[in-house]
Image (cartoon, rainbow, N blue to C red; front, side, top):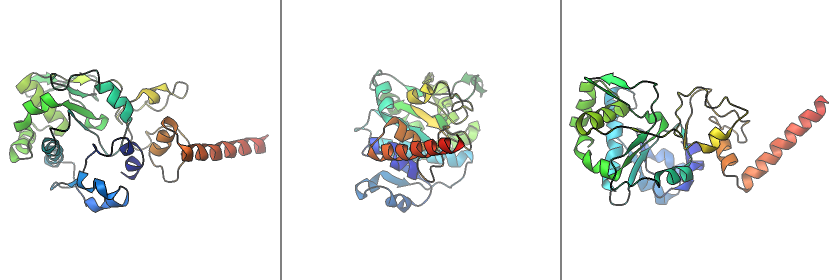
Length: 259
């Protein structure tokens, strides 16, 4: 989260809300006080059971519906993702969120999910997902933070991202709109193409996990996911240019010693 708050959060601090199953005061060290009201502690456990995942998702929908008059989209991302916010905004401009029932994201499997008598594609939450306002209005009663939503997840035995896709397909016949430039951590080869790094420039979201991170030399100390280095390369500022000069000088000196 500190990496996010130092990078892409800065593109849209007034429209980015943070949900946590932990203590919200953790974030007070990283963001100005005027954004404290956008940090929400859930009543969910810090676990990955179906009930707990759906509990957390329900809290995200609750935050949206408290602010629905302000926003045409609800886009949700995990805490191990980089979001290229300017690219996301440009991408969403092609749609009409008050008219189109849009469920946008990227699947993690090559085949649709099969279960409960139907086939459907679901957007992996690890790659990010966006819901249009018209769709959210339609499914409002299905995703409220109440026992109905949690029990629905348990009855289908689907985690939150899969259960929502199931509801949309089964009850409303709404299919996933696939966004190819959304990327999740399951794409193992995403960062291994060194000869053509343009995939990173064009990516709207990037998911990190373990060693699946951009193959850059970190410019910043403790840049575990290389997220801050990536942000520097995409949107360099004076400090980034300073860090790049230091790195280039270091590489030059090392090369000179080898010669």
